[in-house]
Amino acid sequence: MTSITENIFTPPTKPHAKPVAKPVAIIFDWDNTLVDSWVVIHDALNATLNDYGMENWSLDETKSRVAHSMRDSFPTLFGDEWERAGEVFYGHFKKTHLERLSPLPESAGVLSELSKMGIYLGIVSNKTGELLRLEVSHLGWDAMFDVIVGAGDAAHDKPAVDPVEMALLGSNIAMGPHVWFVGDAKIDMECAINAGCLAVLIHETPPNDVEFGPFMPHWHTTRLSTLSNLVKTL
Image: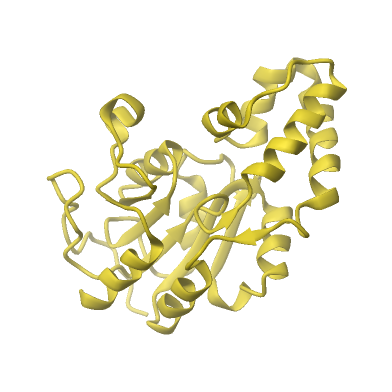
């Protein structure tokens, strides 16, 4: 593959404008972008909070407060005990995460289509790398991804650019708007914009300035299939 060292197009300046050039690479978030995992994360987190005598969170609280990796978020929750609390969390999580793992509608078909187009596909997630790769393998999706980067694999986790750099390492693809970063949350858009990539939000409701601030996505859609259909037309 020819090395790409310059942006081949400028990200849309109008909010939510459709991209105008086909991506060379697409990097996906994992949890709640490609698979449904909120309930599993929520149950494991509340079990951990119970173990530490702390008040449980509602599912809405979990959805709004869980975004950063464990090494970036657990010290705030558990102080000096955060590493031990992390072990407790993963003990609860590992009991059921594979049997309850559920691909979101359209995920498998969209990934298969994009893979057949020859687009470089990767995952950058704040789920620990070992468990992330186990889940991808459990679904039989390994062959569709060129690279899988989880929390702890790079020097820093999302929203830092490090995992994006790692995901593209050795691909001859430089960070830029020819790389689309697809996710469901502000932290994904922040990571995309920090890396100079095209930020694509997959979410049932449009983004707003209050939630996203300076990290508004370049493009928003409600369905993964809309993304793959767009790529086919570019």
